[in-house]
Image (cartoon, rainbow over all chains, first blue to last red; front, side, top):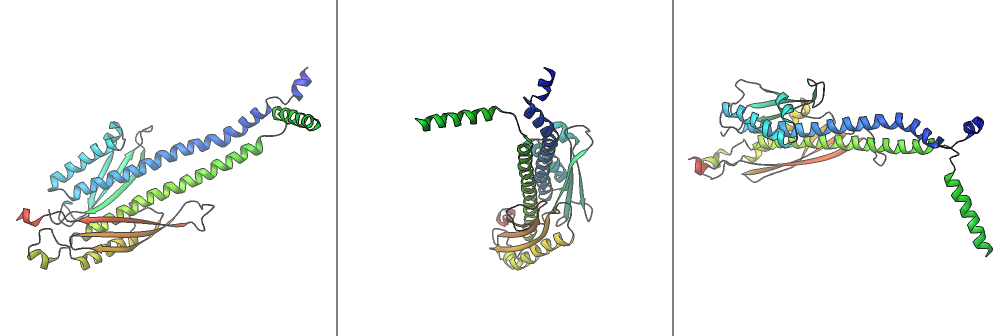
Length: 138
Length: 168
């Protein structure tokens, strides 16, 4: 009876498939999930930073420029699917060659760091930047 | 009648083979694995292409916006309603912006982008249209493609919306 059970190949295909498929396919699914998340964040972050720098460049004053950048981050971030917590932890840096940045014809750069939605919370998922010239006709 | 009998026997034999678990599914699994792997390489390439395209669009928009800042003074003082653009200087500005991108590739220019070339420039005095093309290097070579390099294109239109009549 025992010998018959050992020699029987019934169910062997399922075992063989599981033994092969688990180590081969699970890393692929993990990679796909991480890659999709990263690609989506990269694309949306680029859109967001472009709109932020554009808002800065076409603002009427230095004060309204910073306010507009925050508004775009808040409204645009929510529209692009970022969670309120993620938007709250998003950091950005406005830099330019000459201070103050809001000066006619000045080239402004905004660097945006989007945090991960998962733990570790401090880890940044994507860092993107965009540049634009402040309108000389404002 | 004999033919039908033979067919029945053949069909019975084939059906019994289908239930048989002899042999190996390794080949099938590995085939499926290779198929999934190829799909992933394709997805990775397409994703890089999309991100590079977004980056090129941004570079083009920035160059176009820079071009609109050049005002045609002679037309400006003659009292046009829209802020007039000096087309030859705007073209020079656009070219310089695109050259700057290549000389100092910042973090907003993707590493896949090898070169950015102005392919067309249209300026009618109040708005301008910038067409660019870029050669990009994909992370993985596609089976049907000859090389790793692909060409992408982008277009941006910019216009000065400041109405001089309303500001006077």
